[in-house]
Image (cartoon, rainbow, N blue to C red; front, side, top):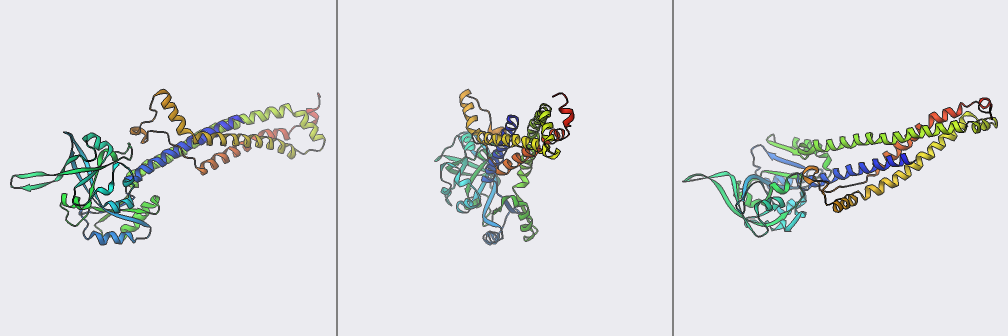
Length: 386
């Protein structure tokens, strides 16, 4: 019983931790990565207001926002950092991205047109030695022609906010946001944009939605989604979770094997009692039922204990690991390796159902052989020396 309970406890805890990692990584990716992106092969989308309105009306699309993307070099206190500059409309960007809710200092809405303000990631701001209110210099990679020759385009920006999405994906160290109209001036895009980001009702249907959307667009448009960049990562996590389930299921199988050995010993010890029941009129089927019920009760009891233990351990896994880290002054998880710097845990009802069902089936299978042996006990032979 305790063996089954221990196996279930471990299995529930491991699956919950895998769910926690999966959910945490998805939240961090979806906080900045657009679900669907539409670009033009020419690099510019003209008449973008009409184009944007048309995409918003597409079935299944929740919101749409324009953007301009460009490379640049940001200079702070003597330090230069390569940066991906995104020009956005703060109001529309809030509908497709979680970035406005990730501010450590300042407001995303302070990206006012014409003020040439910029929002930086925490790590990028730290590398530049910049904080809210400071000035940074942006060197763009589209050079300007002057009588003196070709020189980089340079513009001073004021840092109005700093965001933090967490380490692991490089968002905080690589991204800078400016206003859409400022980006149009900076990159000389006049009244065009680089592309449109879409938010849809079900992010996991992004590939199917992208295929439908691209069919209604001109040939020069390209549609990509978040799975193009991060799909293999989530497939690997799903595969790892599945393999962990079957591997840890072996723990329950070992406990079920112990159940077989226990019931076989019970059958050997109770042969006289079985023989007496047979002489009183019990049929072989009824004898089998006795041991099947006994094994089933052991399996159910172990399952209930394991379910309680696994649920309690999985619910408190984060707090337990935090206590261990604080007690020994160590960092067990690094966000640069595991994408998160703590142990996340999320209990899924479907996992509990699969684990409990598997435990019951294995327990029932384990009772068949001992029950069969009990049904074959011959009363005359069992009572010969009694």
